[in-house]
Length: 516
Image (cartoon, rainbow, N blue to C red; front, side, top):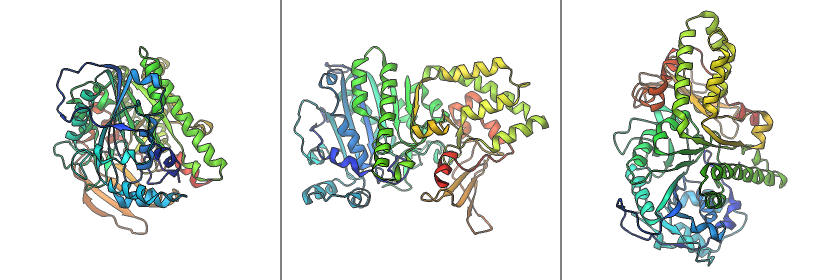
């Protein structure tokens, strides 16, 4: 399998690039409490990368950081880059890095890498020093903080942003959060009231229980930083959800998100630098070109693997969307109107039958999680109920959504099969939602599932066992989903609680591979 930022797989081909990483400079200032006054030397853009190896992503994200040095030399006069990155454990690096290589690394390199286990590094990219050295990235000079620093902590992210904006003062900031992603699920997005709560992106797997940022904690961490982000880029799988978009929309002008998987190497960062430098007065053109270049590169990598006889490329169903946050409120208003009409129409038996059929076959994004294609679902309902939604409404809600899109590209596979997704949304039945445990090697095999009830009850079913294990999950629908900015704007939880039809339980994308 291909390593993606969802599955625990690996992509060793990037290693040769990582081993020729050019020099990084140390932090320009060890004081991490940035003041309100920015130093002189302000550039147009600064890219701030906050990442974690996520057990199996070290080789990919290190390749991303290497890519920061591949932009055109003139671009660095307009774009600066600051990074904070946490390495995985030595055990995980051995399993997902060294053991997968077809070539043996020098012993001193292996030792240097293992010496960095669970260490966090901070640095500012300095393209003026061009002295490739396979061990330069492993210089302990860049270590920041204690070993096994807790990177999913809100203070850690806020501190990094404040340090980075002081180290690289700019007119505009692009924040990249790079690691595994899990989309939106209420049990993964518990109320943010303590550092120990679980979080849906950047899973710190060296901490129990795999703590990560939620929509609310990510909002808190970014929102209290000393600078506004022009772009928030979650370089992780499954994060193009309407729930995350609404929760973070006040914090940035644009989002870069993916509905499906993201290859371990992530976006084409050198292209991002060049496009920002070339289009200083037109950020939308820069982001659109970066979007296309990244997906094109992923397609090229998949085709190259297929040409070499690998069957792993079939897992490379990837996409990327650039969203304009200024248009989200208008879309939310139309979606509230859609929800109001949907809830009212469900009381009519003839309407209910049509709606239930659409829900039963709703396009699921990922086999496990309760995210479904928002646009396909809404459009199907609007088209099926012309006496509820007239032609004007269909045009208006479609226009409102399209106004949110700067660009959207997906893999050749998704396009050719008609399986692309614009954005995901959570569906449930009578206030409950389901998590399915499929075999990742054989996605046609269902090992069990969990039912998260609105009142906090949790039923866990295992294959071959008749009775479920009944426990609780640590919250309720009212204290999670109903507290989201999206739900407050649209009242979508009304439909999650009213709907009586269980949505489709597998993704047509992932099941396509199961029957190949």
